[in-house]
Length: 572
Ligand code: WTA
Image (tube, rainbow, N blue to C red):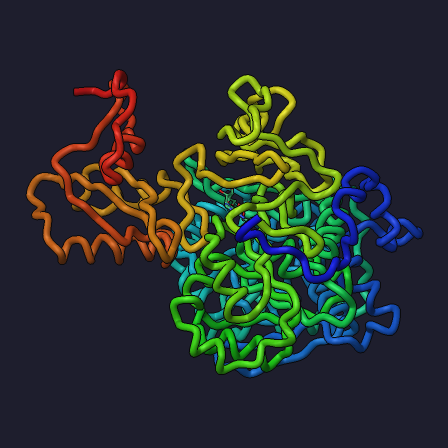
């Protein structure tokens, strides 16, 4: 078919159709040392076992800081350092099942901390360093966090909220300077106190190793728990979808504050013993191309907004670099436009392989594989071992070409174990019997390819980052000028969506540009720098149901000039 892009070589997954028929999850067990009697722990499989063979001296991590200086760590080194972290935390009183937050920029200590926590049986809670103090507080209170590992400047950012965190016992500070509180320990002292030969704790497959906070359309962000058993799926998809091989150098551009940055920025590639590249700095087109070239990146996992920004930076720029070594490119997090796929073919002569999954799914579910023809704009097909469908409200599969709820048959290995202390929310995903309902709208074509249509709820995806309107509205109404706020995702060519806020003001406040700026600043410190409304519109009133709920659907339809739909519940 015109526009379809055929494969150039098969890759690790030789034949999708055959694998879909024959594959069993149990066949992956032999990849892991636990199947030969070692402990069951994702950190052991990702790091320690490689330190017992020739990979001991293989580079596990190229950690590039914001100044573009690089530090290299072998699997052997990371094994000993993370053991020191694990042992040091244990000496601080950390126990199996404790929630331990990692609030750090993307530096090497972040990787050491994550591995150390998981090794001693803790539940690691990675937090994006762009989060403001109130956002950290929400997450720490929800999870009853016991220990936070952070850096000096981020520690100072948290000072106003620390007294509110009743369960917090210790703070470990990277680069600690100045006088320290008695509950603070420097990261260096933690390492010093720790035993480099600490052995990873044996865990159960259903013990959580990570808690990722993510947004829904209602309430504040929720803690998604992923279990040690997720390794089975993260490992096989790293091989089939990311197509990783022993000699690869792999760069995942996602921050470990998001699930992509852990499932595929840390664990998946390390199960396979792959060398990974990590870059602390922010997006910049020239810097990114330079990293690809300089480190000889062969496999690259990124997101549509970044790709669109690269595309905007122009064809001349990409041609300045030698990107011949980039063998395989994947994308995740938001719809990948066909235009971007064609741009990559034109400028780099490489296909971009779209992948669909969620924080809650723990690993890839619907993807494009090296061996499969790409239909630009499609998310691809379910990974072998997973059954996906498009269903109606009763759970009946709808015919090809018909839009419906994107659904999965539950039971894939990396599926979340639960939502931390929120069983009702967990049950909502299974409200249609027999299915896990993802919250997305999609259709399947005649040949089994899945196509994304949009969210089925109010969740916003801005630059690939997931945001709930409720959290933004809650932050907005804490501003003294704001009476009420309704927040929507407004389609945006570059960012996929931007946050738009409709605001009614309290008496005495004037709708000025200065006020908009002030409100914007306020939200950035309360939530995170990416979570602020890029557009604010002051309105006289907001459309509400008779019970007083803001009808975001009506705001959105008005904004887009679309029909307003059923207004029978609207209060006049
Ligand atoms: C969206 C990211 C279109 C979708 C790993 C999903 C996508 C949500 C794609 C999960 C894709 C993710 N095409 N939309 N390839 N991948 N999404 O939890 O709405 O941050 O439900 O996980 O992102 O976002 P999350």
